[in-house]
Image (cartoon, rainbow, N blue to C red):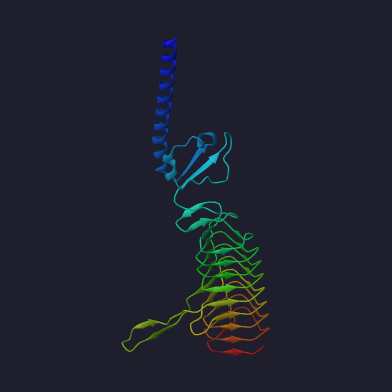
Length: 276
């Protein structure tokens, strides 16, 4: 009887030692894998037995015995992950679309931020906003409800109204082209510190550029439609329901009234006013 108990005790010790050896081997193997990738695929049953060692991993992708799930199993002990996953400090993974957003951004739960898109600090996205892959929404940008933004778009220093359509490759809110020569003959950049304000139901074609203001905001009125490859300089004010065809160029500080139509490749020089 005593020898039987002793045998069981020894067997349990050997089994525990065998499990420990297997875990040590698994840890060494996973460390080698981690040197090549930040993502490790594990069997779901194994996840329940993970030692605390794995709490330092950035992401663990959990899979069943036969197929990999799309969800990410997050085990980072240092950061809160409210919406689908931790990416970097203060940046999180948005639950609807898989894009990245800053923790200070305000995003409606119905907004879609596609994978690869980035929403920066203090940006505001309204209901049903759609942000395409590789688009950058800069700090403090405001985007109204039901606005659709395509791929590879850059929006900064601006507000965009409701139900707008921003096509692929558009750049809004970058510095305007303003320089002067000082008394020493040096070329000096003029400050470009104001914003772009885009109204409701505006459509902006692919690869169009709209510069931020220097002495007043650049403004695009409600219901204006802008074609591809249009350049709108800093401080330009465009009224409502205008049509700007492809390759139009409007120089800085021009003012255009309501219901104005500009045909293809029209050029408007700086400080010109066109009435409604």
